[in-house]
Image (cartoon, rainbow, N blue to C red; front, side, top):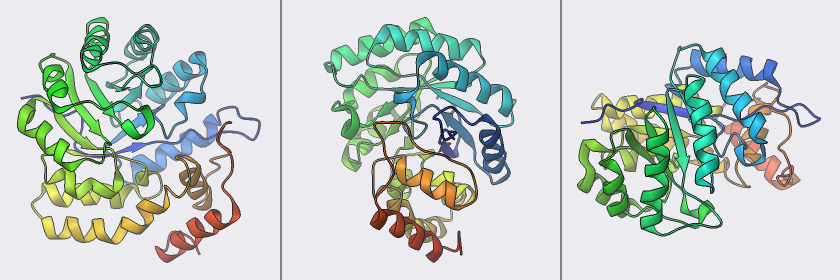
Length: 296
């Protein structure tokens, strides 16, 4: 049995930016404190929502190190260090390990993609070059590459492959992963609208976009389930479903950075090629947040 890096809700945290596109570390510190004070169980730094794909390698390493130092062991910090280049992923992963990351989140290779055998080789190489637990990240809608359940099973045999963030949306596949791997591969939901469904299939929680604006509520969805209050968990999931989906009316993280700004933090702009939402979507996000009492 592999102990999960965390149970509950980890925030797939945004990267606050200044208007000139540089990282706004002062605001980042305030936002991390807000997350920890409101029951976030772990921080995933430099993931998709953190705009990792637009960070230069030197920035990527700096942001991870800064976050680890600032959090200072209050909760686990999971560093997004994946790449479509195995060598690059190893380089960034080793730096994150050196800087004290509690675990690594590794997205599947994108654009060039690979075969299932290639996935095993890719992840095995990173595993063997690092010394921290690894969470696989399966998000085929972005990468064009799916981790098959049988591949997840092969990877679960590696000592430090701790789990998988499952954002395929395929509940049948997730059920198969749990059937094959059991407690040798922890499963976390990568989709906020499937937290309850994935918990029913052996999940240990969620790596969440919604947690950026509703950290305590997202934590509570998981906590209720783990405490045996399935009805309470489902009711809370149903209550926040509309808000969770509103965070994806445009490409992530465009809507959630808008939402974070609306609750009072200086999230700043996204970096190109991501651009500001159009007026109808901005209005929809604002109206939805008003319905939930997050803003007036």
